[in-house]
Image (tube, rainbow, N blue to C red; front, side, top):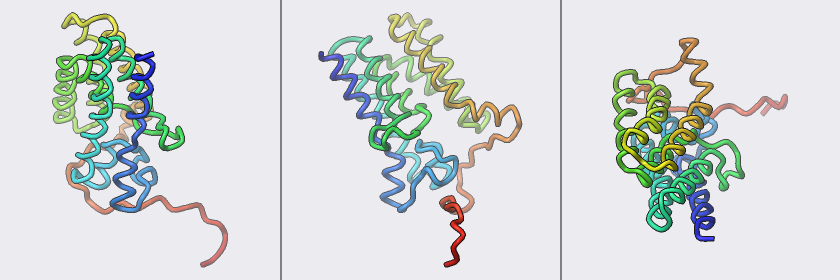
Length: 212
């Protein structure tokens, strides 16, 4: 019963669409209508800069970290990975956005691993930073870091739930980045720019055929 409650709490925490809420509150714009249309920190940072992207990244990480840490502390690593996985699912299909498409789970995955297995999460974060600085492709950094998780967990002798969680998380991140993979293969994937060049605009609504 306790584990089930922890998993539900993890899903609810993960469902909090901080990127959507922050941009809507500060700019009056639906973040899903600008940039890549994603609610995660990467799209918020690209379109509105670090002033908004950094808080979203920290909050998206925290919503994976808190339930995973609490469940691990209360019930052990298996409960921790279940609660962390539920937070990731919540970020992907948020309850508070009526289960519409959410984010790609990267920051929330990192937070979940920091809660369940801090060394694994820390090394994964380090891999992300190194690959990102070398390539400036957030997608490549995210996929590489995700793929490192099960290998790092196994190398550090983590219990089987953590290793299995790493493998499942890696698979989930890769699947959610399949569009990025296609663009990388086509040579059309955009490199991350630290400075926003021009203010973003919301996508125009379909023309109704009526004149103003």
